[in-house]
Length: 95
Image 1 (tube, rainbow, N blue to C red):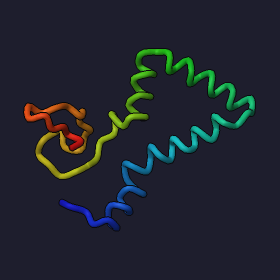
Image 2 (image 1 turned 135 degrees about the vertical axis):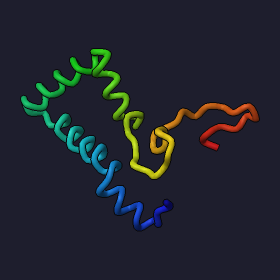
Image 3 (image 1 turned 90 degrees about the vertical axis):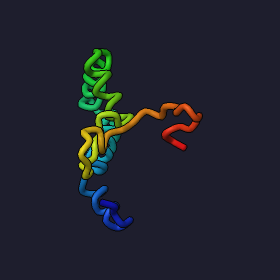
């Protein structure tokens, strides 16, 4: 099902695209605040990122790897990101 630009904008504001962006903005603003709470939060985030699971979680959120969109389709991969690999003819997914 194809969405019109207006429908997509509404969906993005309320759907999957809005939540990570909103969380990222709030986290960035809190981390930039020089308060003792922000310093403590920065220390916790640094410790978390230094673990394998924490680094995987943050990488997935930053690069959108863990983001999926609820799209119509029978294949379980529909709505998930795809690597930009090269096809045999030299074309890529991003072309």
